[in-house]
Amino acid sequence: MTGQNKYDDDDITHLRHCIQLATTAVEAGDEPFGSVLVDAAGRVVFEDRNRISGGDATRHPEFAIARWAAENLTPDERAAATVYTSGEHCPMCSAAHALVGLGRIVFASSGAQYAAWMAELGVAPGPVAGLSITQVAPGIPVAGPVPGLDDEVRRLHERAAQGSASR
Ligand code: ZN
Image (cartoon, rainbow, N blue to C red; front, side, top):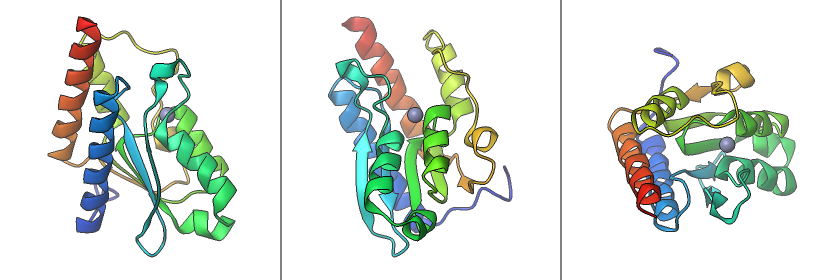
């Protein structure tokens, strides 16, 4: 990952936006994940957050982004766009991202970090294997995790786990 893990100040700005969306998700009783889609000119064209509390476990923001992009962007626009996300795409979202032809992904925290945090918090693993973006979609350029921002995401997961334990 070192050497490939390149990000700049604009990337950090977009990742902070994702963490704000993830915070909104936790406050709504959803899981702390938020993502934004940024076009080649650096504009945010779509954003979403996790919305699984209604019972549909596929309501991940990265999946929503892939479907929005397929409906609203040309193939060239998709390839030139970047998806920013508070937590690395799960296998479902990695596949959707690749299938609709989106470009680079930048994540604040990695899937491996998420798996370790959940284990420490005593949360049972989900039904899907914890494959990285690169394992699912090897052609997608990725960057992350980002030191400092990953700690912010970890705190949101701790908050979410405490919230669900007290419900
Ligand atoms: Zn996902």
